[in-house]
Length: 546
Image 1 (tube, one colour):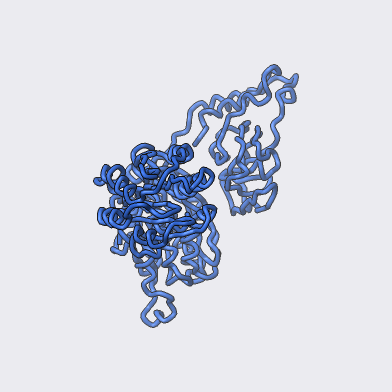
Image 2 (cartoon, helix red, strand yellow; image 1 turned 120 degrees about the vertical axis):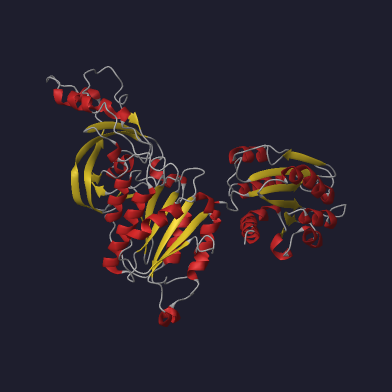
């Protein structure tokens, strides 16, 4: 978010001592950059909690304007975890911004940037007032700033969150690395980076992955191009798999600028072949809903294939092995002709198959035992088990959906798949479920779930899952209702506690039985099971889309 229009007030010197010292400070986000400010000086109000975020800071005392203002203020010791008012002053561009660690913030080095800023503690207005005439220069600067600079909205037809993963290994070398950066800059210009268009960031792969800049750092193509050309070559092994895994797990987050509902794309450049295994990393990326493209340059020659861990590494890493997600260039020379075709692929949303994931494309119904043998305290542990599973999924009106049924001899629909469209509401509804107490009729409860939860959702596109949690023997048949549910497209997980017979659990569970059946002797043991259920749901989802 930019605050340019609001910051024009800082060109005016204050003459009254009767107001609160910080009333003219404009509230900003933790990630607001110095370059977003166009006045010569300003006072901004940083919110609490910025110390908990990963903020981009470049330099020491004098900070590159691409740095977070609040991050620089924390690094400088001007504010702490509670935030506060910061005085900021614009400075000319600089070279060789130095990295340093201070106050819990690790600033990064930067070769050069076009403008800088410094931060200091906010001075009260009493200290600012003097008997000297007010300078007319400040008011002139204020007048110049009343025209809000034009923002680049970008290509609205190509909304995507794109991570370019550069090959920074010794395989490529400094010269070809520079050619690679030039190519990425050309693609960035073709994409139409902008506030309402695609956003992009860069990760460099070598021995260890390094995030060069995030999606939130730049929203104008010219700034992206400049930042790309400033990236320094690292060298080392070509650990592409490690970099893909790092990017999938830590790059595409809300804190780093990911927008809700926008496709996530990773463009991986490989010069030659990777040093590590890339198959597992590709699977993780798909689980996170990331569309992985591989741009391979100078693929291994026939006589070099013996040195490659897996000759099919491209097919195993891409989103889908259908030729759309793989892109080949013979070398780094004359690559201009490839920039537009690659950009067009990245903007073809209907082909980005991996945007739908197990986390946003499943219906999960919980069938929970409310019999008298459970007890109120253990019942709360069951609810916490459910909540732990739900927290991993992206609940929304177009995403994952959750339902809950409590059963004894009777059944009670606590809430259906369409009752709540966000995760917080689902978690609140789970917390508010009240313990019934009674007997145990699990088979009837499965039939009830099929009629009242899954049948109304039969025309939807989400994959259906039923998680049964019980602590004892059912008084009715469970095998028949479970088979009916599975034939209707419902994947069943059975979770038994204490006296639940293993035979019943396996009768209810989907195939393969061993990976869909879980047992713990005591209710606190559910804490050790929920992550396996989540992984299993994702595995089943991926298997159903092969």
